[in-house]
Length: 400
Image 1 (cartoon, rainbow, N blue to C red):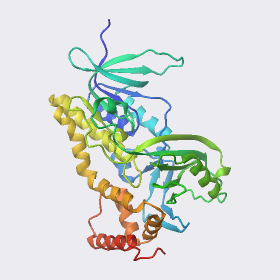
Image 2 (cartoon, rainbow, N blue to C red):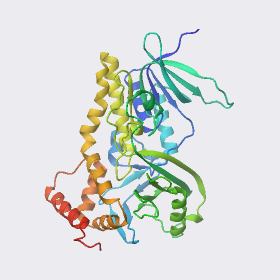
Image 3 (tube, rainbow, N blue to C red):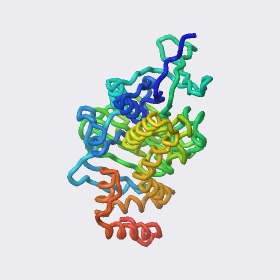
Image 4 (tube, one colour):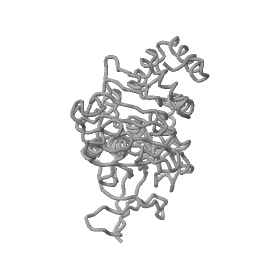
């Protein structure tokens, strides 16, 4: 039998996490195989904060819209505008954006193949052997094998790599998200503004998360998510489209996928496999934001894998999670509390939206989101917001 191809790293999954890890490792001189299912697009609002653009060199031509504010809609239909003071949040369309990331990895020197991961086995020397089924025009049962000194699983929330190799990777709870991409309406033809994100906190649209309408330039993402079994996501999106007039817009495509609710307690197998992105659970609670954290997780995975390859010490796999949680663990903890605290029912959601009127809440929210860190400059504002939280939850402050 011919000798198998051998790579320093096989990256399974070509979304933001996997493509970034492949790019960084290739730039470090490592031999990388990037394995991805061609044509799959994740349902995603597509928000890219300014820090992501700076840290990951995202070019302006990939940004399909620039958002200058958000509108929060309460169960009672009360609306709260949250303008961004002196800045904007960019939006991407995940199809072209993810493809651009994969092409960048290939340009950096990574080998790129379309195929479906099947399993990891071990050769006589204990090295990982990755089996995958190539995607071809003709249906085939052919399986290809390559050897890998290390493997990065960046293959989504229900990661096949994780379930096979990392203890506990199959236990993380998740929200199931669904969205429809439609052609953007003409100005004034629907309840829609091309530089505003609309977020609906209404039980019929999502009993435990939120629904959204996010501009994507020539298109619009209309979606919702829930972890409640049996909740009719498609029906909720259809209702949202009807009430906003977006049911008259042409539907271009639709996608659904699970979104993890919190980071896994362990991201590696202690030997040669490391998870990144949704596979590691790095989606922000409450907001569901994942692109920035996937890019960051991919970069940290690349750094950890490079250190393992350099030193031969598998304990360095743990650096990815350690560094991620040091930088973002506190934010994830607070957002998790917020989701459990405010998303429980329409009564609490009504008070949450009312609280968003507060200028301190708006300013600190946008500053934290744009820069991806908690704002420490104004402790008095944090104290003020804490007491408003308590008053709103106890019903002492009426939603106005």
